[in-house]
Image (cartoon, rainbow, N blue to C red; front, side):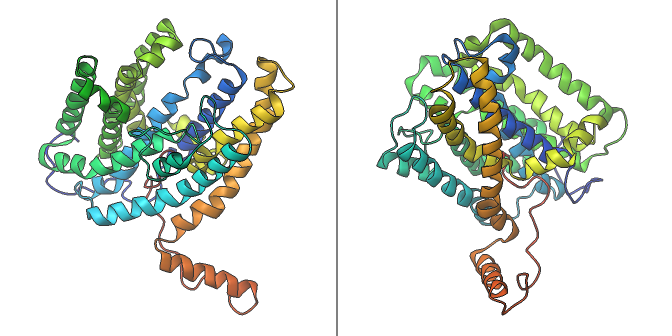
Length: 408
């Protein structure tokens, strides 16, 4: 997995879904929802935000860390099986835009409506024309405008990582996975070290450059798909992942939330090895109990609409909190519990319906022509003048993991 790439080496999982990844997406998306419920129930984040027993929910940011690594793994899964070749930049860009943008723009419309008609996001004014342009063009990490959705910041980062993905694959083909990851880490580390001393470099921090390393670590982990997944090396992967994450968790616990939030850049970088090793372990089917849990039907189902859940939940949680829960309950555990009982089920239900309307059609059909043909067939069927299914089979779904890991 670390030497220069000279050709394709099909692995034991050369095709098909990778067990556990959909469930991991679902769990991560739900964790973000719970995080925002906590912030709605308790004010003062990061200085204060809930009792110690709920402290883990303060770190919804780390679910995004996992999403970005998952995105790198997902996008690299197919190229890894064919010698790390992308198969055309134009085709890649078209498929990413087709997969990501329609649900995102629909969710943006919903978020704007909620912010204008019900309540804006915490700490934000009502969205304006600049918000529509900035968020519509996915440039919210480089241009300021009132945010209609507190979760949208990461979508812009992921979109920008798509732009560097072909370069990462080129580096893998030329130098190998280890050199690619080392190069990305060196560049990003230099940005972090120079940012306090240079205003121009500091501007790059708004782009979340540390996520490029996580993205690259996920891509490197996809190399497991072309390697033997039995033997001592594969068995060691879960233990290596645990060994990589435990020291970071210890530092977070010792330093506390304010310090961790202030140092997200370096903490995120420190989590990159653990994220990559975890994904490699799951792809190798280890540890078995965790893979089986993540691949259980409820978690697979949750993962199937995790992108929609990520896109849709923030306006719902904020609206339920502002209009229903907060006016009748003081800050505290009771408010958090009611948010769990109301905002979480509503977010799940709305997101599932949203996914069926605005996400699934763009997964099933890869072009406007195919989408229009399917819609016309359904109309004819509804009018009793055609079959009950679109003409011809649906276009093949994206390969395992090619969907957005954010949870895209």
